[in-house]
Length: 315
Image 1: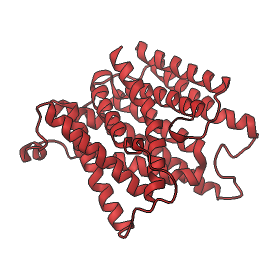
Image 2: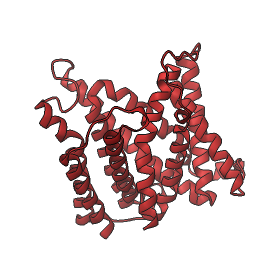
Image 3: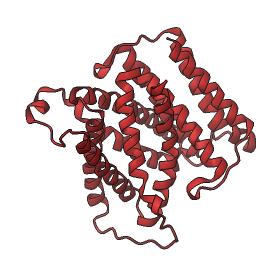
Image 4: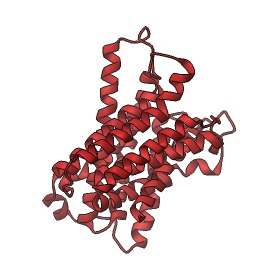
């Protein structure tokens, strides 16, 4: 029960982090700089709690030399996933930016469990687990896509219209969204295994955030070498610096969950928390977000997702 609570909690934190980082982006004028600052704050936070736990921040060279090369890709995968969401949003719209990465996360999570990739514990893909995954995807579609469809009766599926962009190009972006979601699930499994080898999920999360921070620092220096802090709106709130802490807890929670309950189940539980948090942010307009009252359709979609998690959990 504790892993489920942790998964739901860190999932709820994701839309809160998104709202916070959006406000930070307004303040600094760049999505990449805001991401870098968020990662930097998370890295410092994880460094403190790593030291407080009695672990060291360094890794012995022999450990690096003897372990598989993919063990160090978690930070890179996290940056690619984060950046992909930034790029996808204006190309395919908010709805598809949620749906296609989620699809990739669920597919990859179940494949990792089924084949034991990244040294994950093998959990066979049974009919029940497959049906549960389909219910989760269906719940996401109901929660995210159906309200807009009912309201607008559009054929654009929440993204750009066919007249605006070539359909083949749109499908390339959608496939990239699936791929980015698969990298996110891989990051969860990799960080979980790294935590097992290091004997500390906290240190695993620190390593992940450190690598992500370095990658984003290079991106910022290359793309925006002359960035300045230029806030023109009253966006200064003390909580706009908390995104990194929430992100750190998210990575830390996943590093604990993956080896405990499996990557596939971890992904879908966090997803249910994420959708719940998104509905709460919309309903109450937390952290300066625009209020969008939640209707029965979104609640029904959330119930379907919970049913899917229950099916997967039964196996």
